[in-house]
Structures are given as C-alpha cells and as structure tokens.
Length: 458
Image 1 (spheres, one colour):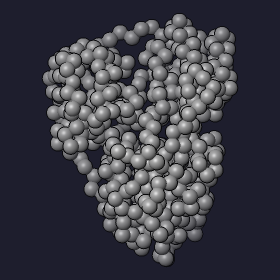
Image 2 (cartoon, rainbow, N blue to C red; image 1 turned 90 degrees about the vertical axis):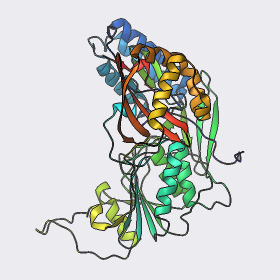
Image 3 (cartoon, rainbow, N blue to C red; image 1 turned 180 degrees about the vertical axis):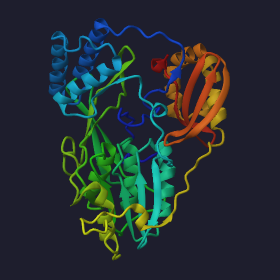
Image 4 (cartoon, helix red, strand yellow; image 1 turned 135 degrees about the vertical axis):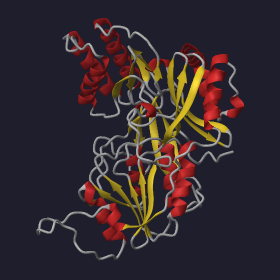
C-alpha cells in the first residue's frame, strides 16, 4: 500500500493539453449525421449552462459570478446574434470569459478536444522528444508535455537513466503546454533526496456549489535513479504553461534548479471535473482548483515564472550551456559584424541517446478490437483494464454501446502512429469511422481515448 505521505494523485483535465481517459472519453467518430441548427435558442442554452458552471464551480467564486453576469449581459444585448457557427461562438465567448477572469484555462470548445483530432506531434516517447548528450558531458531533455503518470513514469525512468552519468542537465520546457501534475511531481523526485518525501505542491479545489475548498497534495516519490549534487537547468518561455510552470516553480523554490529563458505564460488553475457539455456539441472548461506552493503559499497564476537568468527563448540553451560547461566557442554570426546569433541544438550535440518507438505495442490492436466488441455486447472484461479505466468504462458503457453500435461492425483497423498518449488507430466500421489512442502495459489497458458520441461529425 502506498505511503499516504507520498503523492496523492489528483486526476484532472486541462482542455488546452491532451486529456487523459481518467477524465473523459473522447475522439472523433465519423458518421453521417445532421447537426441541430445553431440558433438563438441554442446560444441561450449554452450561455445559461456556462453561467451555471461558473457560479457552481469556478475556483474564484466572485470572479466566476462576474464572468457569468458579463456573458448574460452580452446575450441580452444581442452581442451573439448572427453567430451561426458554433465554432465561432466558442472562440467569441472564450474571449469574453478570459477578458473578465484573465484565466487562459477557461475555454469553450466546439467538439470534445482529443489528441487524435490535433495535428500529429513530433516523434516522442510519452512526451519526451529528445534525450541527448551535449558537448562537455551535459545532458539534455526536451519534454513536450506531462502525459498521465501511467504512461509517463516508465518513459521518465528511461530518460533519466540515459543522462545519469552526465555532469549537468538541461530540461527544455520552452514548448511544454502542461499536462498532468502527478507526472510533474514524479519527475521532480529525480532531483530530490529520496530519504523523505517532500511536499511539492497543493491543489486547492472548490467544492461544487459551495464556497468552501479541499486540498489535494503532491509529494515527491522514490525514483529508480537520482540526479543529485549536480547542476540542473530548466529552459522556459511564453509557451511554458500550467503543470510545466509548476515543475519549474517548485524545484526553484527548493533551490534545486536554475531557471533560464523568458517569463512563462502564467496558468496555475485546473479542472478536476473535466469538460462540461453545454449543448450543441459545445463544452466548457471551468477551472475549479488552483495551485498553492507549500513554501511561498502562492503560485504563478497571471504572473508566470520569472527566470533566474532572463534571456530570449531562442537564446536560453546557449545561456544554459555557458553556465553548465567550460566550453569556449567561436561566436556564431552572419559574418557581417551584426549581433551574435545563438547556436542551435545541433551545434552543441555530442550524441543522441533516445530511441523513440515507432511501431505499436504488442497487444494494442487486439485491445482496440476487443474493446469495440465488448462495448457492443455490453460485456467488458474489466480484468484486462487498470482500475481507473475499468471504473470509467462502467460509467460510460451505455454511451459507448450506443456510439459503436451505430457505427456497425469492424471492417479494418489501421495503425497510424505512436502518440504521446499511446498507439493511434483508425477503425473503419460498416457505417463510419472511429479513432482510438490506447496504451497497453503488461497485457492491461492502462490508458485509452474512446470515441465519444458528443464528437460525432458529418
């Protein structure tokens, strides 16, 4: 049994990043459907539902009430009249909400966001895009996102093992938009003494419909290797957001890293409950929690993380290398005496270390086929799922049954690519197509992004 002093896992979704199945089932379903008209009545319903969510759940009750009143006034003033496209409405009302709250986590989406609907990301191993040894025996890790811990932890163990014998380490989060705080906490553990768990962060969550709060705590956990008594640098910039900011903030407060680059985006709220449907295939993300550092009793929301060494984002790697090593190099310029240009990663590269998987995991295709058949027959084998996936499957079984029954029998299953969240498959059915992202470990489904009836498209 896990020591209760260790990390208390808070499962939550942030709609600006890949969503875990622990939050909701998503993914496109392609079938011939006729969308309902998006008229004034539909807009009225959406506005009313958004306002209700803000009043019931937003982590800052007063601000949530002001935002609700603002969109209600806008609707009464006919500000949304003539918006016939739900996608445009989602963008418009998101801008209105963020103008009141200054919270980039508050968003309205048309269609449930999912990895398979997004543009394919560069090849990566559970978010780890690169693990390299640079000149001067400096390790380098580029991490694009913090995927859920059941996928992240093995990849993190491998990445940190590959750089264990380096003399200094650079972790590049300049393009990291956040993700799961449990994974950020796990990675933090490599840089901290494992003799005792360390309280890294708390997530203060509003109890729905009330004005009181509860706290979920994140603690360091034992890791198979450690990176102690050696310099570590974190590169950040304006695209560094949410859990990535929390990772940099917590380790800097503990005096374990030097942060280099430009001020981060400044998002310290999150949503344990996932996205709420508001009608017309629209969903709202209403943050009901906020981070709170146990040392500073504050966070980075709205202000970002201010680096220890401030520089332009594209110059951050060069600044880190100058600190991390004794290398002296010729200046790299345009040959005309103009200002110096920062060298690229390839200039510093000694050897790439990470081998990125490009073929599917054993058993992932058969798991997709099995899940479809089990949903249609309503007889899932919960023993072949992690406890969390089994729980969510039970909750969503009737929806999955309806969606997959409507699509009809399987014709073909095609592997598309390896994504940060797992293996991506396209399934052709008799009456349409569904897309799946699945991660299988030791014969069990640890993570899966199911197709959702709410994301049907014509």
